[in-house]
Amino acid sequence: MDETEFWELIDGSRADSAGDPEEQADALVDRLLRLDPDRVLDFARHFEARYNRAYTWDLWAAAAVLLDGASDDAFDAFRCWLIGRGRHAFEGALHDPDHLAALLPDFDEDADGDAEDLGYAADEAYEQLTGTDLPDLGLPPPPPEPLGPYVDIEDDAALAERLPRLWDRFRR
Image 1 (tube, rainbow, N blue to C red):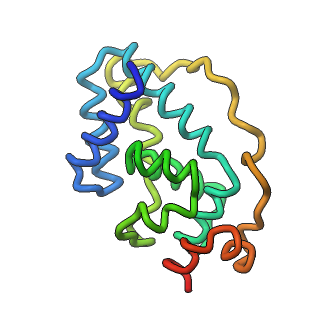
Image 2 (cartoon, rainbow, N blue to C red):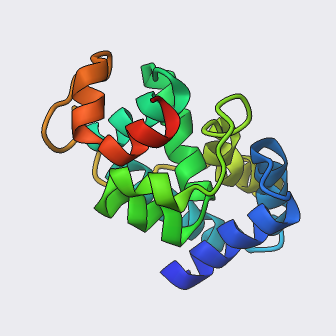
């Protein structure tokens, strides 16, 4: 599976669900069940690699702004949600997390920003297809700490300084 097919599966599942994160996870499992187990593994590798790339202080800060705080678990679910928004939003946010202010036409902190189940879609599909757990993906381990310069995600002034457009749009 190449990167284009990975993003097509993400985009298709989002379209099938009208953007609802829980429904998107179900739609993604349905799409993955149409693949053979090796391609589901490929999908899982693509997802996990992007999930690990998104483990940055700046994205954690963006999650904290958007969600009015972000614990470890909330940030994990946020990264899944960000992948679920598609390639344009994901790559744009990685390049410049403050750009999320423009990339998110609307955002409801009660309904958006949490798509933990997307992170388990490949596991669920693989288990349904094979009757076994998803094997080790053979990827490097995730970084022990978020990448990039540290930002105190509990310090409003630091968040506003690091992400001024996002702060102005969602917290001012």
